[in-house]
Image (cartoon, rainbow, N blue to C red; front, side):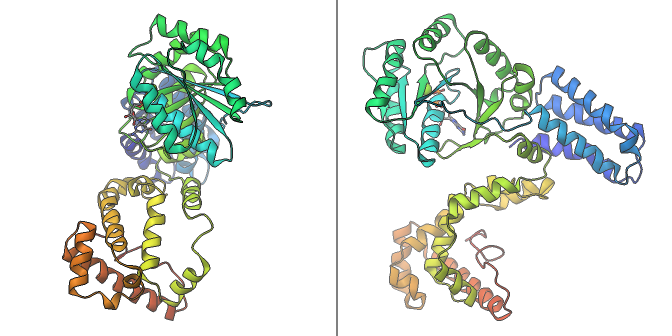
Length: 447
Ligand SMILES: Nc1nc2c(ncn2[C@@H]2O[C@H](COP(=O)(O)OP(=O)(O)O)[C@@H](O)[C@H]2O)c(=O)[nH]1
Ligand SMILES: [Mg+2]
């Protein structure tokens, strides 16, 4: 996420750290680089100007110059102002006091409305709620079909009546939600390639017939500060309550994310971080600021781990691992949990301190290797996983065939497993419990 920006900001601030005392010139030089970094990331120029001015007023102050660690003080100011720029506080999705809560998703075609509708539905289901999706993009038949399929994947009913206009359709949505005992109504709307009058009229009419509690504008982060123009056009006609920034996993430069709150006044509430239906996250300005500055985001990492691992490994597995006696079954489980945490390259950027080494580390993290190891382990029988010593030549050939890999791949996985077990035993003997499946020789290595 925003790799280039992170790299440039770090480079801009690095010279400060090399000096014990800072002069005003040092600070101004660094801020000039910060300014260029932001402009290059396609942040709105007025936003950049205000931002740099605010940082400068504070950073050339006496308190900073005379502090024991002036460089840190400057970085802190940059971070705090970045948090403010991104909206300050986390802006939650507000639920109606009397259900159902009505949430509209609006935006240009291709911005990610339909995907976000399904992601949001899934997100609510996981919170124990009961959403209803409304397929109000009736102009393209494929759109209804797309939402219907996504609804099935997340186990959420989709409301649609062929031949009905969107305003009439949404007008009946609350009755439908009551009938199906649903407490949240998520309306997926039509988009155009650009903002046009017919689209706006239709949306206005829909909002008149069914008032939203949340009207979220979905914007593609890849469009940079063009997103700001789109947001202003929608905000002029609709009672928008917030934004969803999608495709943050792509090579977006950061312009949209950093400009949009300041220019529209609307908070970013959610971000889309993958095409998959679990790729939706609440937007936390403070965590995002840390990430942009390459400081990592430990809180998100912990949350991901907790969500993936749930209660943690079963106690008997933990015990076995501690004894240095873990099986191929344990190995398989560990890999599956690691996979649930998301793409390895995305996890890397949450780890503090990787900073400029992030790119190199990313190159080494290979999700396909993980998938391959999983395929190989899954192609073994339960007995083989418990007693790997019985895996002879013919079994190896069968496992390779079953997993679409080669015998060499299977050999490598078995060798890695032996190595991990050896390390685990060594660790157990030193009475220093440590997870053996991460680190050299672990599933992150090449197979
Ligand atoms: N990588 C990535 N792709 C996304 C994200 N959100 C949506 N997409 C993709 O963007 C394309 C358009 O999404 P769609 O929901 O159909 O957009 P709509 O026209 O606004 O309804 C699809 O290919 C989605 O898979 C995201 O957060 N990350
Ligand atoms: Mg759509």
